[in-house]
Image (cartoon, helix red, strand yellow):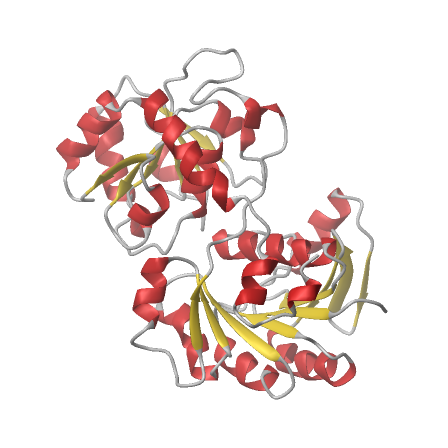
Length: 362
């Protein structure tokens, strides 16, 4: 096999099953490595690390739906997705599989994150450079620091500042914004805030309407703005039963194709009650010329920049006023200006952080 090797190792599912921003970000980076000529191995589990629930059925169904061949033996599933060699094993075999790979392949870099990543980082650093990717400031995400990765990839300045007080002596924190790619299809080329028909849609969009992300505030906004159409997209779990009784709500199940939803709306809501690190959805909406009304918590203001309005998540009146009066076209243009620089090659940033050779960035 030619080219250097990078390995992604964690306890969640490997591509292409997506649950949230962490999965999307890591898949995009893995695929960028593959395009640059790297051998990319992505190790994960087909059992959820938080409750052990089986994901193997979903994985098989998704691979079959996309005409992707796979091998399955001894509880392990192997396949290749967009140039990335994926392996999904039971939870109790993740560390063993990581040892096996690192015992046979010299990996220039191992990237790990999320549940139980400290053990994976400590194991991998014996033979490879290790990056612990901090997708949030939760204890679940920050735990990787206990494994002393060589570099902590902080997904925003907000996260990096929080890391400063928790990093170990051998870990260097680096701001590393998530990877983004230009959106496929003609939606990406539409004028800011316009839908397919060329007129300004009046829709308000929110992704992942669960309590931590501001569901309580959302209920109040839907009730107080009966003339506004709200499109809600399933996130961590299906909360449709809480919202579909409203006549002005359209519910969308979890989807890999957000383009039509962005094209049909002209305002994004991110009313999180928790300190989100750097919500991908804000930048993705910005690439479609859609501004955000977002909470003042965590890294949300950093993600919005000048492309939206930042409000306290408890000020319901202010949210109502913003939805009714915000200049969607002007702020949408600013949102796109904010988002476009984040569509970039990420490998040079990893080289600058000392994680990979500069000559191997493609």
